[in-house]
Amino acid sequence: MAGQTAPVAHPRGGLFFEDFREGEMVRHRLTRTVTQMDNMLFSNMTLNPQPLHIDAHFCATETEWGRPLMNSLFTLGLMIGISVNDLTVGTTIANLGMTEVRFPAPLFEGDTVNVTTEVTGARASRSRPESGIIEFLHRAYKQDGTLVAECHRQVLVKRRQEA
Image 1 (cartoon, rainbow, N blue to C red):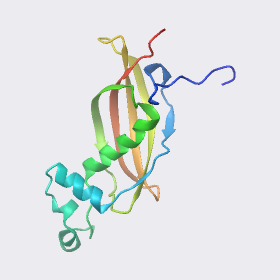
Image 2 (image 1 turned 90 degrees about the vertical axis):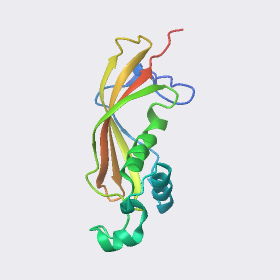
Image 3 (image 1 turned 180 degrees about the vertical axis):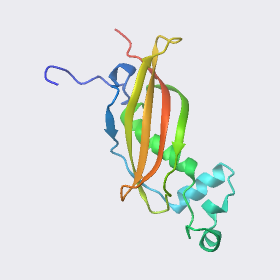
């Protein structure tokens, strides 16, 4: 808008509570092509032996997909991680929760993920006056536009400190 200045972000780049506007949509700049190594490392680091993620022969012979699915918790983490640079790096105090997490279509090795975030709510914290609660709706898509993940997330973020 004419006459308005852009908000001053945190030195690390994140936005403060006052900078978020309900209804705002952010198309994140970062994208990421997911790999077999991502799937193997994440599944092994989280002690998840599900052959649906780590056994190509099992997937080829015993599943409808014919190949390993990306671990859904990796997909969830990637989706949220992609949003951090544009929204909350340096200003998040804590994640408060994630609800309505869905994976409506499969994600496979070689797919490229892009993410959008809609600000669906913002309110001052009643118990912590130096912070506020932002509600996000994150959505991840693969390269052909297919929605592969979404979740609502509530985040406790810093308020701007008055000088």
